[in-house]
Length: 100
Length: 100
DNA sequence: CCTTCTTGCTACATATTATGTAGCGACACA
DNA sequence: TGTGTCGCTACATAATATGTAGCAAGAAGG
Image (cartoon, rainbow over all chains, first blue to last red; front, side, top):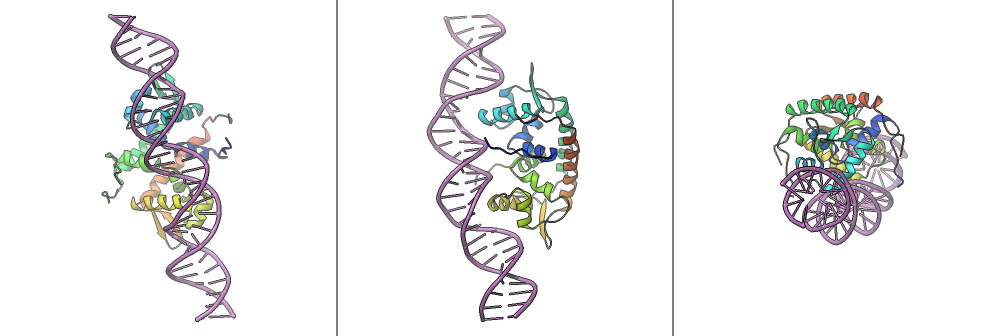
């Protein structure tokens, strides 16, 4: 496949989080486990192809796991989710443009 | 263009940060301003087409600005960069897979 | 004026990635 | 034997990124 892997952890992390839908998936799993299909609905009906690719990636990297109730963040990822909560807080005071 | 804009701030933010190279760009600008070309080099020679698109996006959203010394994060974005630093800290204790 | 830098950025053909829709195989309940 | 769910796959089409070349503008020197 000839894919190069980032050397420093932060680079590897940014590589993963920077992929489309990844941040969103982690965000949607923040509260309760979701089934594959429920997760699709939360993510604007993302195509199952990509959702599966992302979930595989997140599972390989120990961020998400599939339990009885559906997909859920691992213990490790829950700390990461806490950081996303800070993003949420920050975004509330963020001065967005009012739509071109 | 028919692009839909996310309603809640966090969604809008995740939409932006979830685009390829965006997290990386913000990360690379954390210390000192960088010129367009210097930024390209830092980002593994990302194609100028995409770099320009992302910089335009970040500028429209008040996250990055072009000063005399090059591109730099806005005051607002510097807080966001602080959150990325937490990601960096977290990544150090993150248990990555040892390469397939 | 004429080079020779560097700057931000654009053009465009090619390659990679995502979307949308249909549906499979397994399991549960009736 | 239906009817429902589940995770997930196939595949054609559309959207996005890559890689390379190069333009126009500004500064510095001769």
